[in-house]
Image (tube, rainbow, N blue to C red; front, side, top):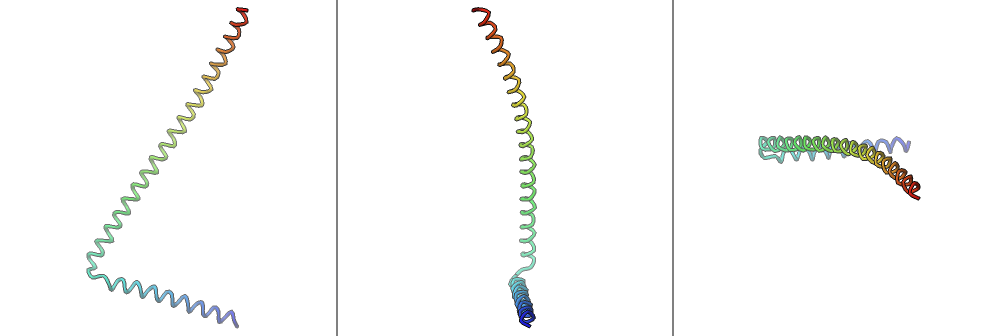
Length: 103
């Protein structure tokens, strides 16, 4: 029985909150003096948001391109490092052989 009472109270509470929300929305609509200006304001806001979305997408594209470039540069660096390490090891061996030959 308590569950039914609690469920009914919860339903009534939700209904009251929904009514208050709808009433506040109606009051906001009633407070608009010039609906055309409000529509223009909302359209401007929508245009700004659309522009900001476009800018964000452009930033993401540039970030992705930069990430690709950095990955390529890292690969080139690693390849070059390996090459120079091999060259240095080869030179070291040649110098050691020269030192041994000169002794």
